[in-house]
Image (cartoon, rainbow, N blue to C red; front, side, top):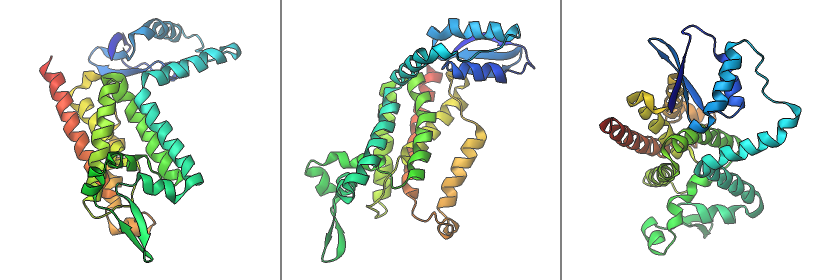
Length: 283
């Protein structure tokens, strides 16, 4: 994030912020001693941001889209996706696999579970993780993260992947985002497998890693540009604790990969502490 200008202390910036988001201008407004400080994520959008601020200051209508702007809007959307390729690819792969499950069914699911699963003598049998890896099926360490077993499961996870992933990739780069995906995905999957569970899936372990990473960066390095509402942190941590209780099962949330959530959270705390410590050391 790059500081741009100070806005009046008590000014209502809601319309300005709405216009900035509609124009795909990543920004943040922080409360400072002298007023509200406006930040921009991409310096290349500085001129467009200043133009909107000037119209807002003069009380002019912030026209967000004209009828002949559709091609440019589409171009801007594609440009935004190109800035976060790892996050976008995570979402696309999850959607494609979810669609393919409806075609190939269990055949695809057992290809992506952490160890091979089959039926022998009418009973469920599954392989050993060590033997699975030595046979070359190393993708199984990560692939369960892309498995989702229902629309709500899929939408909930991908919504938070998009929310947190864009911040990580825009502010720390695609390489860091890819590293977080791999380490958090494997860490969450192995944590769940260690409890004796083999049939599980979902991106929620990665989501909790991203949550912890973004939260620590925002708390320890406020000028880094990371942001997550504290109530969202409370809600997601509360949800994780709730799904670990017997009460969750009584209302239909019993089959939850709790250890994957916890494993991902721990990974995110480690990476968030590491990267924020590096940032503080380099000041």
